[in-house]
Image (cartoon, rainbow over all chains, first blue to last red):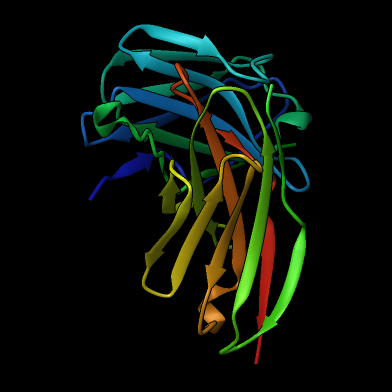
Length: 114
Length: 110
């Protein structure tokens, strides 16, 4: 079974603090993704990576950056948090093998910025 | 761009059958995925369709019509644990990413 883990389930931060969210997958997947999910807005892609040290902006990259130094690990960085970044953050990974690209998700991190 | 539409909510009775629809508009279609997401949890992969027709997997079946830009997920013999949001997602050629709909919340009542 594919396993995707995230560093925290719940985080509470103050406005202006720096936050690192880490995601690790154990299936040697090439692609990794960071989403945020908000009521009524669905899943929105922040950034994704298709290889080590490669990254591409998703639909809402502003206020975020990412790092992928190793294939199994993809980090989301919030340099200076704001209250509008309160959300559920979901990491996912997928493989290019078999041409299907279904994504497997981690358990999510619920971030609250006060 | 891609446009994916799903109804927002439906209620069904335990033991019944429910059909969850998804319509999409995209160029270069290359696969449709269904995910189940329980409240407060991550989405889990249910099914994949790339060719027209019905794919059956136990109590769940998924149908695709590429010419109509339409898919549905059929849940049979509904159980209380099927109460969840069901997301459809579309992939296009040359793209590693998926475009997700906003999800259809299914509430199962006794």
